[in-house]
Image (cartoon, rainbow, N blue to C red; front, top):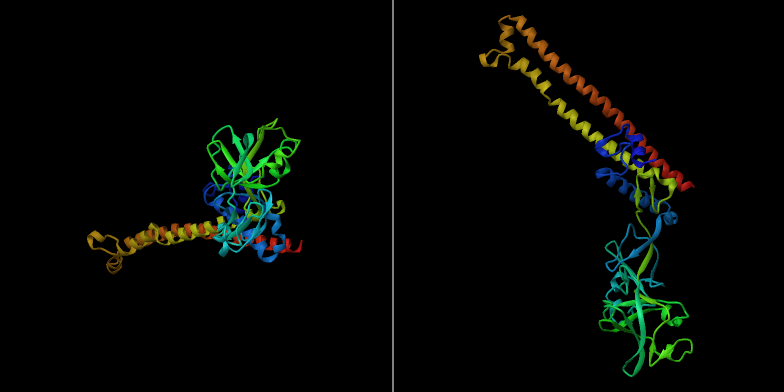
Length: 363
């Protein structure tokens, strides 16, 4: 059932003001905001009263070069380039990239830290991890050591210091190339080098090494190392089908109740304003005018009518005032009835919402 329909079942009508009519496949405006806040509120309550059940809201999320926004402080696991990352204090974050520091982080021993509501991984991961083809591998000598250089068919856009992963079958490359994340130590437009001894290919009979160059029989690929984390997050909301990603189906009704409660409260505020407006309405003002300003242009008021014993005119003024007051009173009666119903429904919804957490804690 659509979330909009479920919400309308509690708010009492198909209210287009808050986008909860049966025709609404999506939640818009304030209603969408309240629904998302409802999911966050559920997660926060579960974390407080039964933290062991937080994993119900966990899912894998990609960590970009700018970090990952956290729903709360709970992180279950972090990986970068297939390696488990270790959490460190944010106070040490600058030392993680200082090669002179004992905390310097290598690709095979990544680390992560949390600061300002975000999670960051070091070494910095790539945002996409898109695969790029490798044409050949060649010997590259640096400081008297024979290492591996990689040729690509086009500009690879890598710079010294970037980190990459290589994907290939073991029949095409030794495992050392595919089981580790490597730092680029040298780079030109279509070639870059990594610190893997060339002897891994040169000393093997498995690979066709000709003149210190090796061209695989099939395409192999490299990609910049990406990172993921198993964290608590606000999942995607599919209002049309009534589902929420990374959220227990048994709890779908809780954001619905939270949203309905906010709508009812908003209605209370609107009704209160209407009551205040009615009390200062034209009807009451007109009633007062019948009494105090009758015949004002002729300096002729109600007191004068009574003193001059013009009771017929006085009675007309009094009757007019009563009519205006009756109209205002009828409006107030309708508004008061609406206010009482909305207030009662709000209390009912709040009761259902709070009771649900008692049931979750006992389950």
